[in-house]
View 1 (cartoon, rainbow, N blue to C red):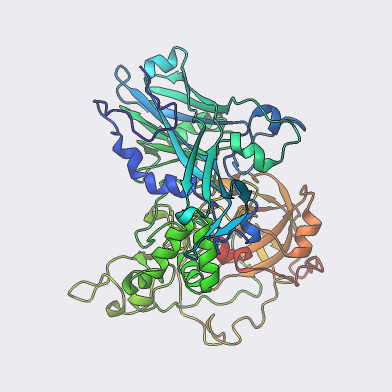
View 2 (cartoon, rainbow, N blue to C red; view 1 turned 135 degrees about the vertical axis):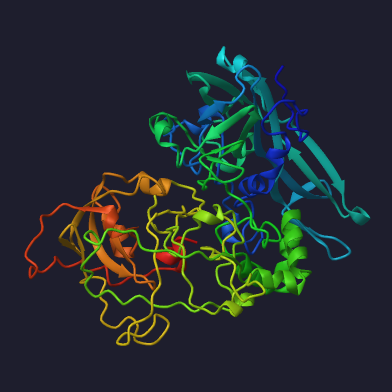
Length: 617
């Protein structure tokens, strides 16, 4: 029999025998799943009065169908930042023990809870008690999770549908000295999850998990804040089992590529959990785009509900809130109060760990073809990067990050780095002074590789959801010594002679620069999912940018982007390496001038989150 906690309980199903993951595998992904569950729940400065905290619940929201489709059907996509009434996950499953294989599904979401402050029996926005404590009316949320377990054979015969609802309720908290009371109320959540399986070949199946909101819809013109009371919020799914393993949908084995492409994931994006590899024992299907094998770095002491931001920066900013701001934040929500308590009492050694971490260093040699990446005009000489002291190593991982053997470099490429610093300044040196292999992490974020929407590029501008995608590129880079005639990248004059709008780079014998037209050909293996969405599209080059490591990226604008003119004016582009572009113009004379870049390109009003280096974070 399938097991489910229909009233939104948190107790896990009983452990089942057989090979494969135990219920503990889901718990190993607990920190990752919780980061997804509470992403954007409450943002710095964690005050109710902050504008950014007046529009909430942006990911994985499943409303009653008639309300969300009052103006037309929803448009399916892998992004969970669009409101919907259902969420569908499809993935490939290998049954190691077909006769005894079992599938376990855990559906998790938030149920909105209205916290209403009352004085003398009437609702008020705020109330100050006799002891000076402030109480604020605010919308909270409670975590709910429901679990389903069924034999694989049963799912192949027709599947199983189970209620994943949450009951209505009300809790009353009297305030001291009869100054008033706080009433927390919840409306009933009605939803159901259907799990089915389709046999593709011996030992290989396609699993479908579809969760939908079945609650009666409020009137069509009901405000979104009110409709949220009947919605599943931050909905995501964990899928595991006994005697089964799952195939990566980002980087599948070559023989399963066509079957992976046939999977239809709507309003969610499934990635592997567990150890590295193209298969794994558990899968996380989230409304935020993540890499395979996501994890929270040990340096991060707790969730700040803004996983694309840097822990150290948010911690410092929170420390600097005024006493009045902190009082309001504590009165806003218990989770905000917990963040303030953690920050205010953080030991110095914990705070220092937020500044930097180095995982491993491995040597690398270039693999890009010389005849395809030759002739960079205005390209700086490669430079030598001196390693920082171990206690100040940049790039701390306070994050959900991909495995260390595929960590992206400053532009999203898993390019290992060859250091030049002496062994005695590198962490992990053994007794003989030899450094243990260390690769600098690419991001100081808590959740690198997360994206709320699929329409960004390598490295694209940060989305409004503040979550951008990690973009992988298999071409490693070797840092070399800076030339005598060009300063190192950190020295004055390092940019002299570089002009993004007039520089060009030869690709297949064609000089590409501002105004050149190209077709996008992102790499099939190692490329980010968001790059793959743009495969085959045509674009116009806006500028050529040189990285501090000597590599090159071309900023492009899509031909069929209705906002192309606006993005070009604002300086928002998609970024690709030269070997990911196919020229659409024949090779001309070497003396033939390239077309000028759009006039607006030089005025690049970019924030840190919009630059190529920051985007990879």
